[in-house]
Image 1 (tube, rainbow, N blue to C red):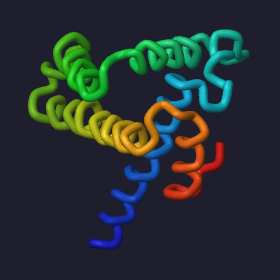
Image 2: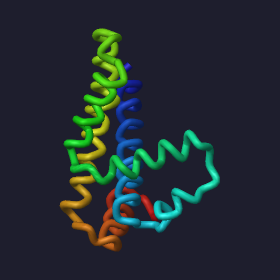
Image 3: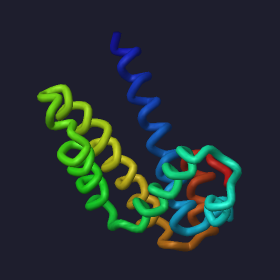
Length: 130
């Protein structure tokens, strides 16, 4: 059973890194893909979600995960679901988003906003090629 749990946390770790890279790409235009988001041929729902992510990226690190938790818990009504609503919103809306922000912080602390340095860092540390 410990193997199952550690594999699950490994999946969270991999998603956290991918999400951090996506946020950095949107913020710093690492690949050029983010600037074309408005013109992509995707569903309206996907387009809306993508534009919300662009707004999210412009918020300060760590504050945005707290604000997202408050939005989901209070304004979207997760507080009405009792403990289950709190646990889910905390884990998905605050804990996970804070992990992603911590990864963004780690990368920016090591590389600043230097696009090429970030790309080298991602390749060397996480084997991610942009």
